[in-house]
Image 1 (cartoon, helix red, strand yellow):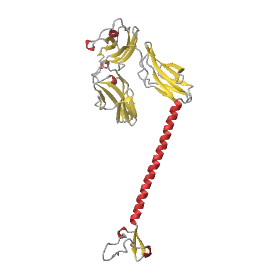
Image 2 (spheres, one colour):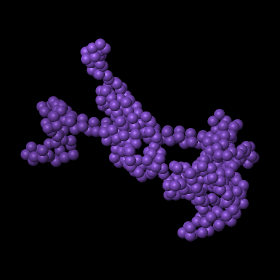
Image 3 (spheres, rainbow, N blue to C red):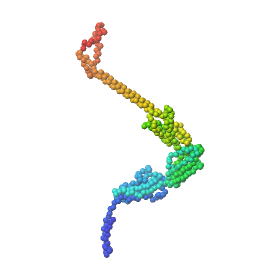
Image 4 (tube, rainbow, N blue to C red):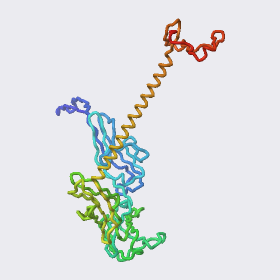
Length: 408
């Protein structure tokens, strides 16, 4: 309301005024708060909370939207996200609900975005690695195991234990004698020296705890004794292109601290013509011409020894030539067979056509004239009826032809 008022000091009771009502439009003004019954510093996993979005707008807003860490939230009772009027209800909280919440309202004048509201959900520690980690170590060597946990609050304590190979798993876990532990925030590092196969090797567990409780599933490390490595697997010897030969083996589940060796021999003389080492079983050998006949030996090596070799042989020129010869022979035989089949089909069809034409063509004899009929129903065979009253054969007629060409 805008008011203009005039006053005369000499006549106090004489006052004149006029008013004008202003209609001001503006985009929404939004404020986001936590429900009054909740303590922002003590929101735990499994709790239910709600947020309120207060909006002042002219004209009234026609859309209200919620977001978490910049991503739009959608109403989903199944996932515990319920939107009702200007409130957001979150049920059965997990750590996934941790983050910055914002509400925004929209009217014809524009969009108003609220303040950011930070929610930190407290939860028990979780191991950052879900699978068991395999660690291979030689007897007498130090082994370092690193255990990292995700948690809030992140004031953690760690407990390490061992389930030895020589002990029944139902007998429980034991402490690790001689081990040292260093804790740095959410990470704990255990160092120890396994010596005895039965008592020092096995599954090592790392259990982290905070004020919310203990890990439900501890981090696990399978500590195994290093032995002679297995031979490489899935090896292929690829024919040379541009005088380059490739030897490739599978690189899945490669054992640690293992080196791979390639030895290349000329088949006829068994002379070593090339050797190379690599940390992965992949090798590229230059200078190998297509006519070279080679044998490749690939094996794995660690501190404990050498695996059995994997042997591959390649007689490239003959192999390629024989493959081409077999292919050309196969193509030639295939083409010949196709031609014979086509000819047989055509001959069969021609025979059918000829038989049909012969069947439809009839000859009839009438008054010394030759008539050709194309109507099969009118065709009459040239057969004389055996009627004794019409045909009389004398003794002299026997052996003579029934008619002569002169009749025609």
